[in-house]
Image (tube, rainbow, N blue to C red):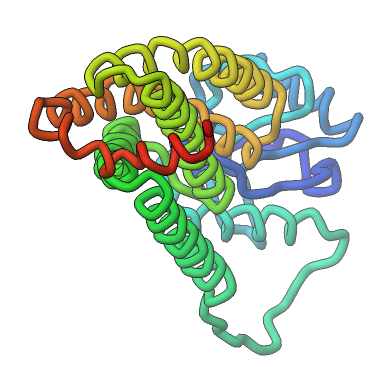
Amino acid sequence: DLYGFLATGLSGSQLKAAYLDTDPQTSMPIVALEFNDEGQKLFSDLTERNIGKPIAIYLDGEIISAPRVNSKISDGKAIISGGFSIEEARELAQRLNAGALPVPVSLLSQTTVGATIGQDSVQRSFLAGLIGLVMVAIFMIVYYRFPGLLSVLALTVYALFVLAIFKVAGVTLTLAGIAGFILSIGMAVDANVLIFERIREELRRGRTLKASIEDGFKHAWTSIRDSNVSSLITCFILAWVGSSIIRGFAITLFIGILVSMFSAITVTRTFLRIFSSKFFQDKLWLFDRKKALKKSE
């Protein structure tokens, strides 16, 4: 043809589906292709003969993409990558699916609709997560008093640290990723609850504030470790066998759990150690000791 490409015998009739997906390594948008049995064999032979060369994809006589072959593909499944935006990858997938129709397509009318549904979903998810976090913060402060306030500060450090990791690692926060992040915050709160309950138990026994803090962390660590390790194993399995959506949820939750263990054992402990001086030893009501003593009587 005019572009110097030769006919291959592979056409849209052998294409089963083309759809938007996400690269699991880079989290960048890609276009995934699936061929039927006939197309699988043709595509396998075609990629074997053209490793390192581009293969042009035509629609209505015009090239819409010319990806380069990296290796032989024999399973009938391929991806097209190249720094697409989500809109570009979705448009290419739609054009490939249009080319798979047995009849030509002509444009009769065109209407532009804003992508408000996805934007609204993301905004609602963030709003729901923010409301939930505020309610959790209020509960922690009211029920655990001063340690609850310190845990809110520690969780703020935790959230900023996790978001920084997402930024550096290039993690894309999809709806599933946001859900994983919010769930990891819940697990971080759970770790703080275990620690504070252990500290209360030590205070009931008449221990000093400093000794109660140290023993409380020591006794809570086993439960925190076991629950988080089991969750990490689950995340690994989901990331290994799950689809791109499930994989995004698993990766964000995995990172969040690792950081939550660090936050609970290091950040929260550091804050409590700072305020375990003699000044606070005489103000144990800040740690709700009176309530704990009433329960023990």
